[in-house]
Image 1 (cartoon, rainbow, N blue to C red):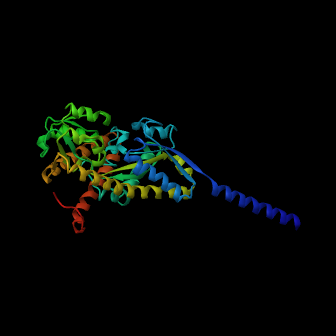
Image 2: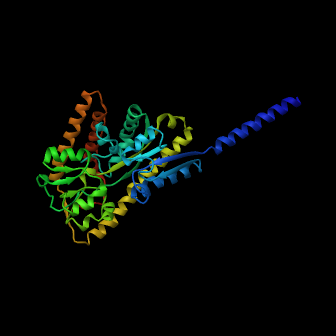
Image 3: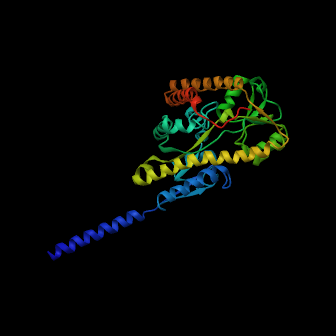
Length: 357
């Protein structure tokens, strides 16, 4: 009997010790990002994500935010997770390039869902499920939406842009599918150069116009100082999201509660970043409106022609990909466009604080 009591006590002690060890287990991840520490993509997305993950997990999850270019070149952050240089990466789908058109559709699409409808489509319209399934199937990564942001400026330009015809022959700096769209449908001459070269090229008139980012980011770079016209809204990037990726086997091996808390941290970050960046943009616009720039607001005719061209690009790219055995672009585009059309059909009942200009 005495031996049995000793055995029971030893088992109980072992159970308590094991429980305490599990409770104290730490999960530390190095996360590759796309920008310097002080850029909005870190201050309003990566840093809050790390803080939320730590708080929700009572300190069990520690995410080390590593600024862009340290763990990998910014366009190679997803590959850095695949080969083990980083545990996590956070950035836009478009940084995976256009070999698979899915990447140029799912995180942000020209004339696609805007600040009110993109996140609902991703979380409640099937977008995130397709994103996760696609990444696991094609890249061996687990992915989730993590961070979002508002519309960019359409352009800082030396020439006025009021109709799609004004784009003809313009040396317009842009990237990705928008470059193909304005070239093939509107006769523009897209110029693809890194953001670090834009101020100099715009100043020397090596380009006629550039799109880059949101009002607050563009203002910080000083484009308004050298180009007279500011064109908006940025229908080429009406809203955008980042995604957080980890190798799927590492993600699946994490305790369920840790996975849940990281997912919640991502959702909080997505909500926060959209709103905090919008308010920064308001402050930037307030200052810009007091300056010497002339603002041009694109009309409904411009938007309609741009949407027709953009959707044609997407469906042509999807058809080509499907013929090559890749069904994902068609799945994603069909889902997104149907959701956007339904949103626009029924959303007029909503009260929005937006005054047409």
